[in-house]
Length: 469
Image (cartoon, rainbow, N blue to C red; front, side):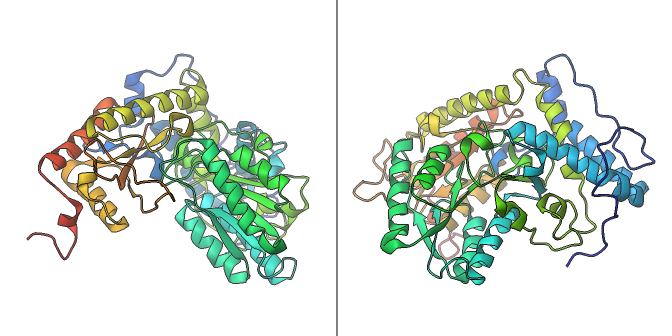
């Protein structure tokens, strides 16, 4: 249980009007620059990045510009200068301002539908905790099904087993193909798995659907899958969209899920860690959701529960408006950033695939700002451990940061995809493109892999039992 009760008037504090620091309010927001941000200004905003590293992995941890970090530091200073004033007069109104900004970004019907949490994994715990209680309290029958994608994020898959499988659910996975040829292939696999979940008249209580899978990265036709769930009588749909906001358009009412979460610190330039969970205010279940950290706001609604989980640093959740100001410095705002990132990551992915004699793991329409590119089969990536060792080597020996995926799955009736030399492609890099990236980042990755190939490197050389001394 978290300690230190929140101030009595924090929950009802009005939106900030004043800007003085003495009463805990935020400093005045910076005025939006009129000129489009320049290349030099972008470099300055990300000058804190390690210049020695080719950072083509925005997907794992995101990035935060200096101007937003400065706003965060101001909030931290306000708290440290007078913590009582911050908690009594600044925190809740600051969180409300951020929630309202998120509601506007994602098309929520009302600010009450938006809760701020640390990350999408926390949001998943909130939803899955409720499902587990429903099994434990007899609202769901033991053996009722929960459906998830095979490529669901690892922490969410483990949460599904920790919460609902342990409580009595039957977990059914959707075995998605990879490489994937089309959205239709995903939809067909989803329908087939849903039919399995419903066998014998079994109820499907929850479907957990990614908007963009993490590894391998594929944009899922989430609106279509939600519609299928409605047609087939699935009780509730939770969309884990950890990577979505800032990568693809997000309209939660149009998507139509019961629960939708996305991180703001991955692709929307907020500092770690902040995410949102959207629930529909007209759904009775909204009042039954609770933050897994129980504190003094328990029972006052999820937005308030999430807004006070004890003494901690809330500053990342208070700078959403400053992140919006940052994206609005770019031509076209977030839509322009998304479009340019998509075009560039596809261009760089094709450049790498051509250099390595391989291919993209999915067509451009199923990519956002990340794309999977096959590695030359001669590298011999044969396990997740191989993939991690090669990733570590690229970091340490070549100063290139990029995730590597081992494709262990075979599509039934389909031969493993091969490179131009005829070797099966089992390893893929997941490259990202964000506003700070330049072509040279990807050329360093290209050249590093080409060097390994030319030297006859294989992943087995990194395995502990076979590594040369």
